[in-house]
Length: 113
Image 1 (spheres, one colour):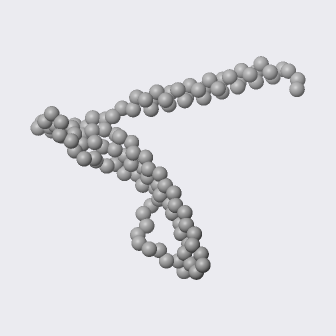
Image 2: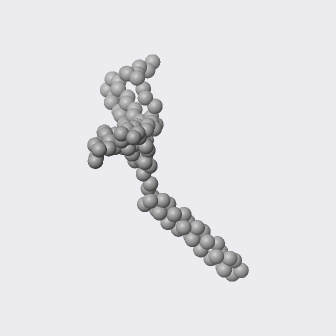
Image 3: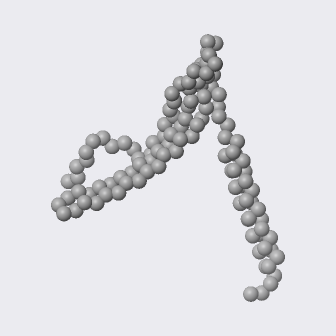
């Protein structure tokens, strides 16, 4: 019979959270971010045995800022230009590599081993 201590939360959690508001030039700015976290652990406790392991990660991605003024509030998204550029470079590298392999195979197709 296994016993479990306390409530168990799911190992993968995705949350959208609001940060601490800042007052800037008569405006109130509230940061918004997405937190993706994963945590897993296991333990065996018994007579003459004690084993355990745990692991996890967390990733925080800024999404935008809520700007609150006297006129109301609006959401200003944060654009990740660097991430977009890096994804484009990666895609280009994959395409160029596949193209080079294809050309190499076409050139060497007629030759014997």
